[in-house]
Image 1 (cartoon, protein in one colour):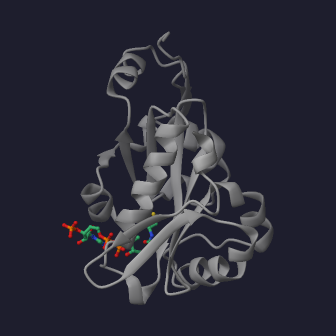
Image 2 (cartoon, rainbow, N blue to C red):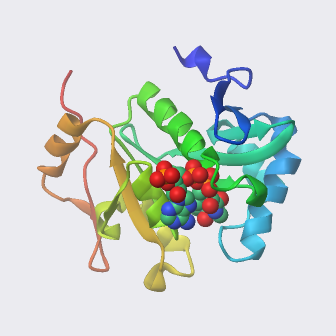
Length: 201
Ligand SMILES: CC(C)(COP(=O)(O)OP(=O)(O)OC[C@H]1O[C@@H](n2cnc3c(N)ncnc32)[C@H](O)[C@@H]1OP(=O)(O)O)[C@@H](O)C(=O)NCCC(=O)NCCS
C-alpha cells in the first residue's frame, strides 16, 4: 500500500479553473519549494526553510503542480506512532482559492491514514482554511508533542500567536487516549505529556 506514496503517484483533480496534480516530492522540487516557502517566510507568514532542512525532510513533502509550475506544497511530519503535523503548507499566490490547498491537505490526510495515525494537527494563522478542510481549533496544551519537540526551542514559545488545529482520523482510538491520565507535556507552563498508548487491535 505504501508504494502508492512515490513521486510518480499522482492525484489529479480538476478545480473550476486549473488542472492540478499532487504527488510526493522529490529532490528536483527543492529549488521551487525554497522559492515558494521562503517567499511567504519573507512576509512573516511562514517559517523559512533552508535547502538542508528541506532535503532532510524531503520524504515529508507532497507537491501540487499545474502546467509544469509548482502550485503548492505541504508536509506531513511524524511525531509519534499516533500523531503527525501538517506543516510547510503553501499555495502560490496565483493558484490561491482554486482548491489547491484542500487538494494538498486531502493528500496528506490520505497519507496519514495509510500510516495509521490517530490524528493530525497544525499550528496556523489561517484557522478558517483549516476549519474548511476538517480541522477543529484546540488549546495548544492539547498538543504536548509539538511543544516538547519544537516549541521549547522557539523564541516565540511564551508569546506564540499561532492557532492550534486538530483533525481526528480515528475517533475511537483518540477518545480512548483522551481518557488516559496526563503524565508529562506542556500545560500551564509546566511540562506534562499525554502518553501515546494505543488500544490493542
Ligand atoms: C492557506 C492556503 C494554504 C489556502 O490555500 P488555497 O488553495 O487558497 O485554499 P482552497 O482554495 O483549497 O480553499 C479551501 C476552502 O478554504 C477556504 N479558505 C481558503 N483560504 C482561507 C483563509 N485564509 N481563511 C478562511 N478560509 C479560507 C476557501 O474559501 C475554501 O472554502 P470552500 O470550500 O467553502 O470554497 C493559502 O492561502 C496559502 O498558501 N497561504 C499562505 C501560506 C499559509 O498561510 N500557509 C498555512 C501555514 S499553516
